[in-house]
Length: 591
Image 1: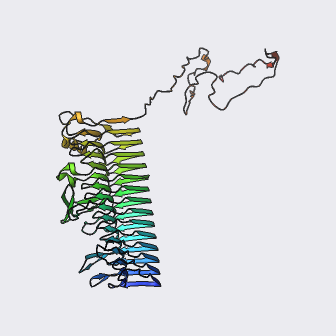
Image 2: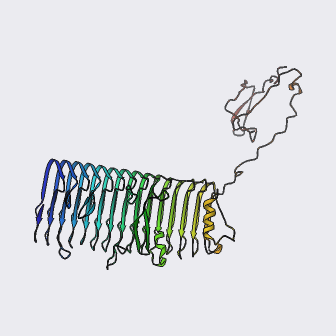
Image 3: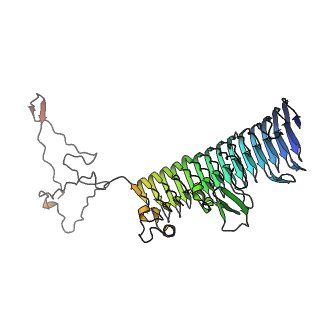
C-alpha cells in the first residue's frame, strides 16, 4: 500500500510482469488522505489473478481516497493492460472515494475477463467479486472495459455506485461477447442526491441468464435510483438515475435475466435504449422476493421459494416511487418474447397501496422491428398517475400466439394509455389479446393500421358488464378468441376508441367481364362424332380464358401461310401494296 498522507501529490506506480497473483487478502493499493492527489496505478501483465479474502480484507487492486467528508482528495486511476484477468471468491478491482473529493477511474483492456463468486468477511459480510467505482461523499470516476470476452457469474458485479451528493461517471463497455449468469450484474445506481451514472454497452453477443440459487438476485444490466426510498433516507432531494444504452447483434435474456432502468425513490428513472438485430426474451426463474411498500418506494423480504413464484426474463423501465419513469426504445430486426418473457414500462403495483396521486408518471414504450413475435409473451405499460404510459409498435410482421398480451393499463385516476400499432400483417392466435384499460378515467385509444389482420377482431361488451373491469379482464383472458378492446371501469361512455385501418381493396376491382361467343353456325355437321368413333377433346390450361377480341394473340406459336403476290395497288400516301388471294384451305376433318 502506498499512501499520500497530507496535502500534495502521490507518485504513480507501474507494475510490469508476466503474471500478477494476489491472494488471501493481499492488496495492491494506492491511497490518498487529507487534500492530496493520488497517483495512478498502471499494470501490464500477461495474466492477472485476484482471489479470496484474508481476515477482514478481500484480495484487491485499488486506488482510494481515505478522507473525511469535508476534505476533497482526488483518488488516482487504475489502468490495466492484460491478456487474461480472473477475479474470484471476493477478489476486486476498484476505486473508492470516502470524502468530498473525486474517486478514480478504471480502464481495462484485455482479451478475456472473468469475474465470479463471493466470500464472507467479518467486516463486510458477503463480499462479491467485482470491478467497482464507488463514492461515499463526492463523485466517482468511470469504468471503461474493452475485451473480446467478459464473463460474470455467481453474483459477480461491475458497479458504479453513488451514496451521497456526488455524481457518477458511469460504465462503458466495448465487447465481443458478454455473459451474465447466476445473479451476476452490471449496475449503476444512486442512493442520494448524486446523479447515477450511464451504462453504455456495445457488443456482438449478449447473454443474460438465471438468478442466484435462492432467486433473490437476477442476472442483469440495471440502472437505478433509490434515494428517498425506505432504507435510503436523505434530507436532500434524491438524484436521478442514469440512462442505459445497449447495442448488440444478438441479445438473449433467459430464465429470469433482466435489463432495467427503474426508480424506487424520489429521483427520476433514466431512459432505456436497446438496438439489437436479434433479441430473444424467454422463460422464467423461481423467485423468493416479496415486495411491500408505499408511494415512495419498496422494502424487500425473503421468503421460501414456491413453485408458483416465478421471475420472468424481462426488459423493464419502472417507477415505484415519486420519481418519473423513463422511456424505453427498442429497435432492431427480429424480436421474440416467449414462455413468460416480458417487456414492461410504467408505475408498478407496489405504489398502488398508498396515495396514487403522489406517484411519478410512467414512461412510454416504443418498439421498431421488422418482425415482432410473442409466444406466451407480454408487452405492457402501467400508469397510476398522469396521462403517459403509451405503447407504439412499428413492425412489418406482428405475431401473437398462446395467450400473449399487448396492453396499456391505467389504475387510480390516470388516463388510459394509448396503443398505436403500424404493421403489414397482424396474426393473433389462441386467445392473444390487444387491450387498453382504465379504472377511474377515460380508457386509452387503440389505433391499428395493418394491411392484413388474421385471427383478431374488435370486441364490444354488453352494457351490463361494460363497467366491470374485472369481468372484462376475465372474459378476454379466459375465452378462446383473440380480442382488441378499449374499456373503462366507469362504463361504456368512458371507454376508449378502437380504430382499425386496413386498405380498401375490392376483389372485383379491375376485372373485365369476358366476351361470350355464340356457337358458330358454320360448324360442319360432318365433324360430329359417329357411332363407334373415339371422341376427341380440346383443353385450355394455365390461366385460360377467351381473348377479348379476335385480334388478341393467344399464344406464341403461329402458323403462317405465304402466297405469291398476284396484284398491287397504290395507297393514298403513294406506297405500293402487294396483294394475293388465299389458296383453298383443306377440310378441318379427316373424313
